[in-house]
Image 1 (cartoon, one colour):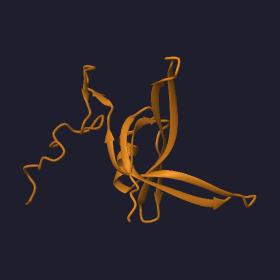
Image 2: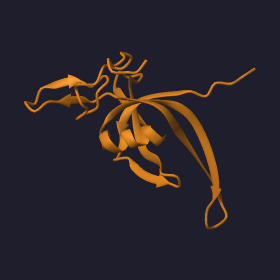
Image 3: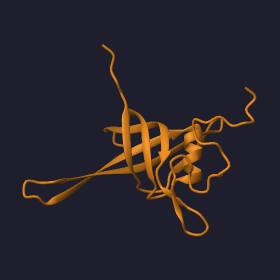
Image 4: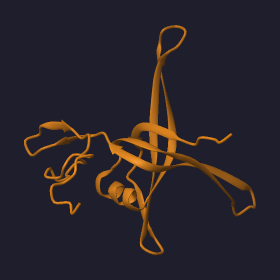
Length: 143
């Protein structure tokens, strides 16, 4: 039987993405993402629990994150879990589990010059408005 390794998260960035350029001019972005669940305990009191996830984005998604994401941005991330290990200076084996993102949707509302807000379902803040919506072909495509 085959396994499934898929993660879907909606949360807020804990800090601005950390961007690095690797050999071959490959961009990689890394940032903490907070997801919060709220529920009522046995006494009826509201309780919030926040989990922190380390998200890693590669290439085009990393460049998108660098351009448009900042601390507090609300995003949907879809990807897979990857655990890596290493030894620290004292020889102690350490482990880290990260979310390797392969889909990113910016959920922040964007504002125009007059302070009006629109849902940013397919546009990032500051993204050109003359682009066709996702899934709709542009009229100038060669096919």
